[in-house]
Image (tube, rainbow, N blue to C red):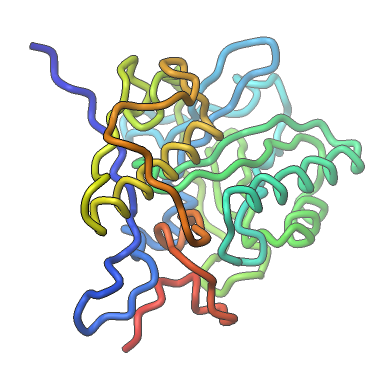
Length: 275
């Protein structure tokens, strides 16, 4: 019997009644700085296929440069349109800020293409752009204008972090060699496998309903960014369908799903634990 495809582990909101805790969202498994080194970048080559640009295994050097993908001469830049100024955001707000980024790139007259950035485990996903043409100062200025803490420089040595200065915990980094592989376009909750996902939780019991709702929200987030060749975002198997009664803020490089209104403090997007 073939092995079942693994499924994305959803970063569920913590239980509100957890003793001794006031944790608003789960902390990430890696630092923000490392998230920029480890993220996977999905690119649809104009007139061609969809590929994933991934950190290369040490034995795979040298790195694949952008010339092999776009025929473009470095520097090539990757900039996100999400989590502007470190704010907690809904899925609709993420789509809106990304659209504003695209409009800004069009006004600058630069050549660009949509991309998706994501954690290796797909705990978070961001929409953005790969941009060709601007200098370092130009792209950093544009990214800072759109509230981004970093851009990624892609050249023949790999992909490296270039900080904009917006966040103290993100600094310029060394290049990480990358490789490319064809993207798996099946179920995004199954890492692209051609199988239907099944929603856990619900409809009975408070926590089970919360789990089912967060899973549905995460699936919707991934389908919106990555698509699904299996069901095209249709209804999945499961009992009933949970309904959100409060705002839900999407996962980011700084933590998982969060319910309810955010507090008016920057620390809100850093995990939210009291000492």
